Image (cartoon, rainbow, N blue to C red; front, side, top):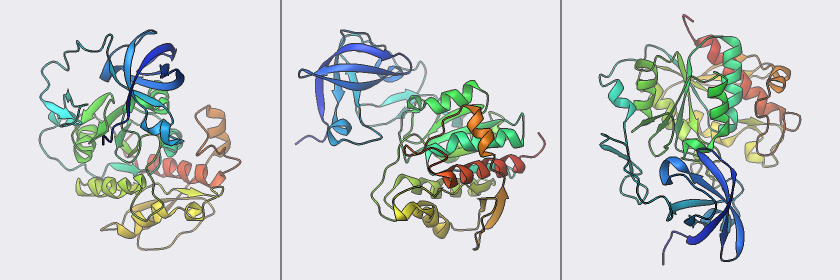
Length: 337
């Protein structure tokens, strides 16, 4: 039995062109939504004969409910790969491809000198953190390191592209198994080190791409990547800032108030970290808790994405306040800008 669910189909339309092109593909007489990562499988046009992976859509997964082009049989069989590259991403799989790792830009290990690294556990926190940090410290160069825990393709996130276009982010490195960012890194420590030391970032936000893996267990979820990301920052001499996942509107008790995702990370950290707290809330424990402003009205007016798990700020105010507080604290931690 094969674990890969691959089906042959024909592209009937390209509904949204781009690096993560949105398509309609006809498979066995059924028209289905699909995504094609053009940097991986090449350009796509109506009429192309493709093989798609249908596993997520077949399972009805909310965050991955579409097919993915595995190979374009019409125009995707003549790619030459990245010239001069000798390091592989997704190595030893059928999707392995060569990259130029960011680590080669900063080969000598150096301390990050206390640079602040905001650690998020959910991609929905990213625009809030980036926007609030820019309000607190205009002109700061803040990059995003995309790690494991959610979607691996960097091209999938429209949020990242919008933040880059609006100069709320200055760079995007996909680390470890994640791929397709403006720059690639073999490891999360390597990405953080290159971002600060080679690319000149003042600070970084580290966390997963869109969607999140989850099993409703203490350790079996994508948010646990925050533990590794915080430890990587600490080991490199950075200041790790935990941006807590909180909620006042999630119907699941384990995510109400302080999510069990963040609670688990805080309990497992090998040494204390800085934790952002929205104004009006108090948290206690071995970590250093810093209060940050949460300009919810200003964020609404920014036009940036304002939904988490389908909920608006009015439906889950605490989620947005906690993420905005994290950005405010991050901005206040940036020195010399």
